[in-house]
Length: 95
Image: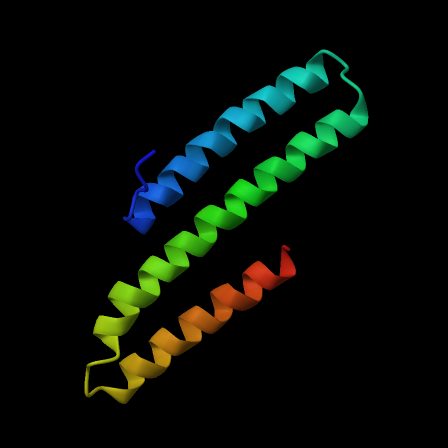
């Protein structure tokens, strides 16, 4: 199997898989499937969402952030740093 190098494509694949899992979880709930099986599938969805988020942040750091840090404008640099810190703190809260 060929590895996909583009982090955005990888994130898209993870999100599409998560969407499929979510649909399956909803069906499981409707069919009154054993709760632990449902929770296990929800954990899978969480893992896929985390993976997509990590890939997008990695892509951002290698592109937008890297390019933005070449500016001479210190306010722009500080804004970029604050954005990353905020999103990292946000993801920490939800893990």
